[in-house]
Image (cartoon, rainbow, N blue to C red; front, side, top):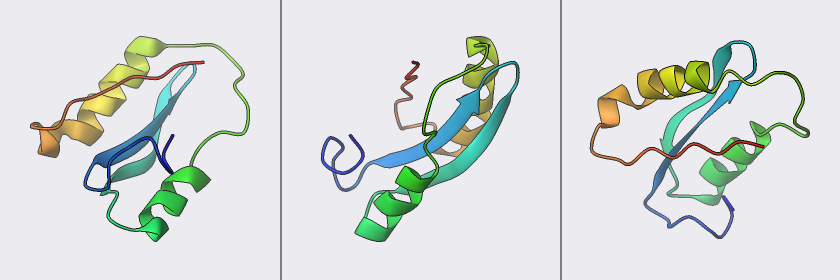
Length: 77
């Protein structure tokens, strides 16, 4: 999805959440292959554990706060 499913000038950040949430990659503009590779390396290899979706959304809002004009999407397993 990151390689081909998102337009070049999009912004993306990655937040993981289980019992708590943590920022795995801050918001970055997908303006190069290096930016895409950096985000891909922050993705989990498998899904496991509990899901505190509220924790994930709260953390995503913190990561997203300075880029309020960009839509936010939540993907879960």
